[in-house]
Structures are given as structure tokens and as C-alpha cells.
Image (cartoon, rainbow, N blue to C red):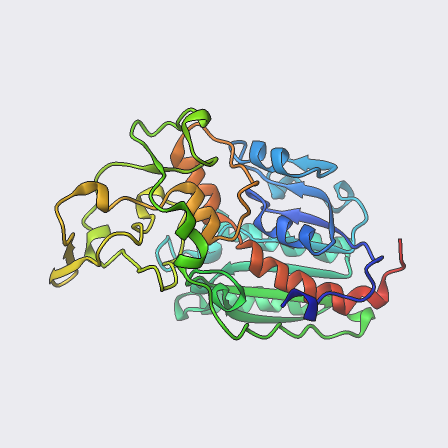
Length: 345
């Protein structure tokens, strides 16, 4: 429960800067735990309208992190962010620091070292722990070790923290050594949520976005409650893509074409090696999750509206986000640890 982690010092207000903010999953989780996001950085100009629409950040900087210096940041207690994961992903390029998207993790560390906040948090995909990336990962750890921070990292499954989804991510948390405080990862909850608990009330009320463009909001039962139509690739059909109502969702990915199938559908049938087919011919049964359903699974509230004209962009923002409930658990523990080191406001 949240109450078990929330600091008794409710008058403490920790200021943070957010990098690679995306739609704001990390930001929202920390905000819900009483942190004040005073500065945010997001390079994708298609994403910043969603960030600005849902938050009251004092500043949203849309430059590349490579162009940002420590002097550009206000004084903050913490820096949080999820550097791009494609270069570390087992389903992506697997190039690590050989990819420019992997190198920005080093820029993130550069700013932490220069700004010296009380704490930092970084999130990335499980693939960065694979043997493919051992040399790059060891270099990353070396860069963090050569700093003023005592840090811990752990592979967490968001499903253990109130997120109805199998989603494994590596989380780094560092505290400035002057604080003489060690971060202890929160313990998993005793039970896991299911698709039934997350999206049952939405039933099958989503609208198809057949042109790829978003529907008129007035036609939607709920904002962003629309889904991508179109065919499925051989790669997609190489696995069962249906989880039932009383199961966790598959990982919500950033690609619209990879969205899981709605749990109303029967499980897909294996007909050969890496080859599945739909159990029933009716195509409407095998629809993708809507953007809103995916957002619910990522634990965004319905009041959070994703701004886009291309429905694929909606899936991208949701899939790239850190689940809000996972962020909340981490934020609550950090607030509990650091409240003694911050003067009441």
C-alpha cells in the first residue's frame, strides 16, 4: 500500500528535473508522491504537446540532451529519466554505445555529475543486462561508480508494483555520498493486478482508427479509446498475442502494430514452428488493444489525455512510458529516504 511508504514529513517538497520525459509516466508517478517537476527535457516535438497539456512544469526544454549543460538546469533535489532503450533492446538494434541513442545515457550521467543533485534515477530495458552488452554495461557502471554517488540497480517487473503487465526494466537509483543514505528497493506487492481489473469496464467500446488518423474526440466513449486496424506481420503471428482477462498483459510496446490483442479474443492456435493463427475467422474479435486500454495497463489515469493526430503516435507515447504505479513506488521510497535531508517548505 502507498501509505506504508509515504513519508510522515508531508511538508517536504523535493524538486526534480526530468530527462527523456516522453509523455510523462515517470513525471506523473513522482508528482503523485508530492515531488515538484520544475524542468523537463523531451527532444521529440510530437510528444511535447502531451507533456505540456498534462503537466504544469515550469520549463519544457525540447533540445537534444547533448546540447544541454548543467548551467541550463535549475537547482533541484533529483534528476530522473529513462534514456532511449532501442539500442539496448533485445528486439532492437542491440548496438549499445555504438548507437547514438545509447550514448545519450552517458550524457545523462554527465549532467548528474555536473549538477550533483541529492539523488538520481534511471530506467532502461532488461536487454542491457544481456551478455551482448556486457562491455558497454560495465562501462556504464564504471562511469556511475566514478562519481559522488552510491547507487544500486535491479531488474524489476512492473507487475510486482501494481501494474497489470509483464514489463521488466532495469532501475538505477543513486544517492549523493554526502547523504550517507542507502537506497533499498521497495518490496513487491503481495498480489498482482489483472487485465480484468484494469480494463474490464471498457468492454469493447473502442473505435477503430481505420485511416491511421485519430477519430473525432466527440465520437469516442473515452479519450484515446481507439485502436489501430490493418493486418498482422508474420513476426506478429509467430506467437500467441492474446492474454486472458485473469492474466497480466504482455508488455505494452511502442509500436502500434505490436499491440497485444484484446482479451475478449480466444487464444491463438499454434499450427507450426513460430506460426500461429486466429482461432476464429471474425477479424473484429482479434482487434488490438486501444490506446486508452494500453494507457490503463500502463496505469495512466483516464484524465491523462495523449495528444496526437496519428494513432500510431499514441501507441508510441504509451509504450515508451514508465508505468505510473512503478514510478510511484520508487518515488515514495526515495521521498521516505530523503525527507530528513530536505528542509520543510
